[in-house]
Length: 67
Image (cartoon, rainbow, N blue to C red; front, side, top):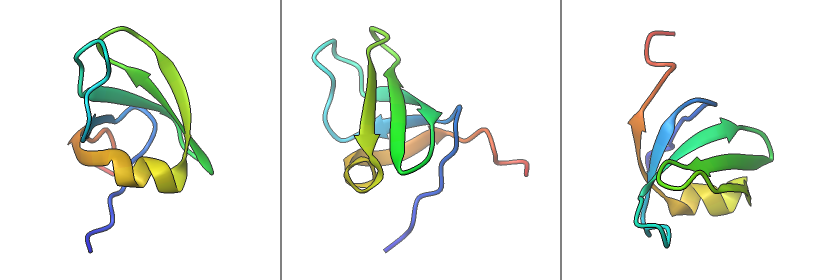
């Protein structure tokens, strides 16, 4: 299985949409818990890393592509 790499500032597309209708979330914090902010309504959530990795469909923008 392909391991996703992500960092703060990346935009992730999740498998299920938020009640506001947005699929895209900005990753704001990376650690044991992942902090994500909805790009539609601005709702902020902290999610345990294993759960977040199951929720992610793709990384839409990767801010660390040049590093």
